[in-house]
Length: 119
Image 1 (cartoon, rainbow, N blue to C red):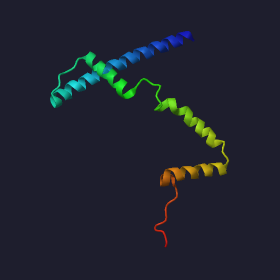
Image 2 (image 1 turned 135 degrees about the horizontal axis):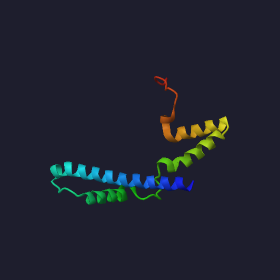
Image 3 (image 1 turned 180 degrees about the vertical axis):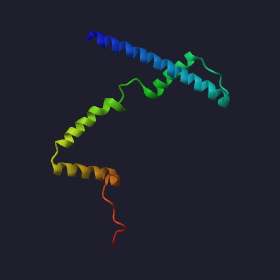
Image 4 (image 1 turned 45 degrees about the vertical axis):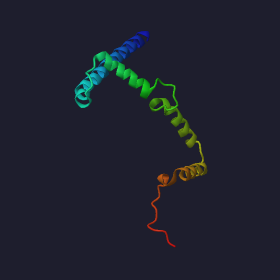
């Protein structure tokens, strides 16, 4: 079993390094193909492309720990809500839906509205 985890760790490391190299080459290629002609900037090296990737990760992606989590990290909250909804009685579900309909407006209304209200 220990051999499996070592092999898995090495594969993750290899694929991680390969991904960094490929992304660096893509950034360098796109920068050097587009920006010098459009903006008149100088071409960049591979190391500079990696620096741009790191800078963009810091500025736009962060390093985790934030409150805006998406993807697999946030699934626990959805599962918790699903379990809570499954444990409700039909009356509680209708009340819950009515509250959300009032909060969110007609977006949650699944019934078709009448053609025109009568005076």
